[in-house]
Image (cartoon, rainbow, N blue to C red; front, side):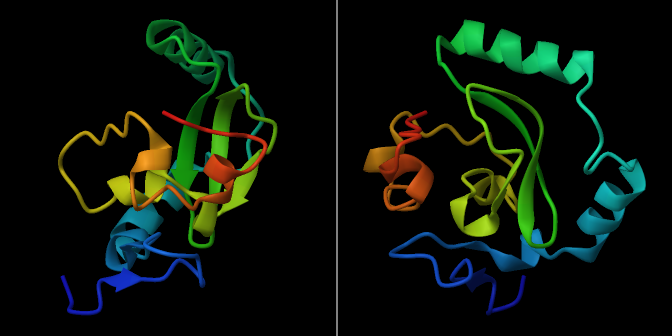
Length: 127
């Protein structure tokens, strides 16, 4: 990883940064493009995954997120209206470049996400 591996998420506030090398990884992006899944219609299998995630986690929102070059696109979603967001609103971006499962029990208490507009705004995402 280069020494310039963290960027400011297109001028996002406070500590909302992510591993830029992982987001812009050409191998990852080529694989994503190769799936041909971006901007495709809803599919029952993916919708079922988010429905089960909501039930298991007892949460009102669940998403299947895919990170493209400049956006986060949702293949499936429950409890969240937008079909995509800009990267500065992505929580998922923090998982790239890591090998561990990322669990943030309260997004308002994590420096990476506390100032995210999806956390502080009307959506009030928490987990």
